[in-house]
Length: 253
Image (cartoon, rainbow, N blue to C red):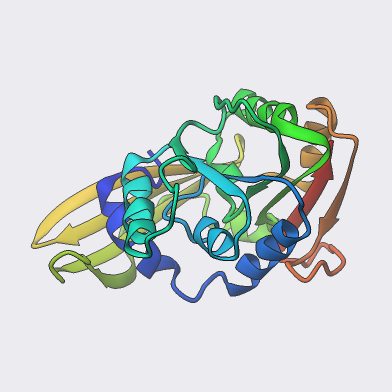
C-alpha cells in the first residue's frame, strides 16, 4: 500500500505542511493558463485541487484512497464549496475513465512514482493521453535519481529512523512516525516501511516507489503517444542538469 491507509490520512496535511509552496504555485500557474477543465491525478487530501477550486478553476480530481478523499471532502464541505461531490472520484491512476476531455492533467507530489510496474506506468500515461483534448498538456514531477544516494541505501537498516511527531486532528492524540527504507537497485524500486506509533500501539505500512531516469521517461512518453515535451530542473522552469534535484515535465498531446 502507499498513502492509502487511515493513518496516512490523519497526518498527511501535517506531514506536508510547508513543503510544497513552489510546487503549488507551478501547478496553479499551469491551471490558470487553461480555458477548459483540468484534472488532478492522485489528488489526495486536496493540497493542489482545493486551491484550484478556490480560484474558480474548473478542476476535477481522483485518488485511490477513500480515506484521503474523505479528508478532502471534509475540508471542502467546511468551506461550503459547491458541487464538490461531483468533482472528486475514487479511481486508480492506471484504470480511470471520464466522459469528458481535459485541457490539462496534473500529477503532482511525485505520485507517478507509486506505479512500481512498467505496465501500470504505460496504462496511466495512455489513459491520460486519451483524456486530453487535442493540444492538451500533462504536467508532473518526480525526483532526479542520484546514483550515489541510491547506492548508499541498498542495504536495509536495522533500526527505524524517526520522521516526526504529529497529532490526530480528531482528538489530539500523539502520533510518532518513523521509517526504514531500502533501494532495490536492479528493479529501480525503493521499499519503505512506515511505522506509526499511536497510544503505544504500533502500525506498519509498506510503500514502494519506482524511480525513473530522464531518457527512460522520454521513451515512455513516446511509447504512449505524446507529441512533444519539455523537462525542467525545478518548478521555476530552470534548465535541467545532472545536479537538479527535481524533474518537472510538461508533455503535449
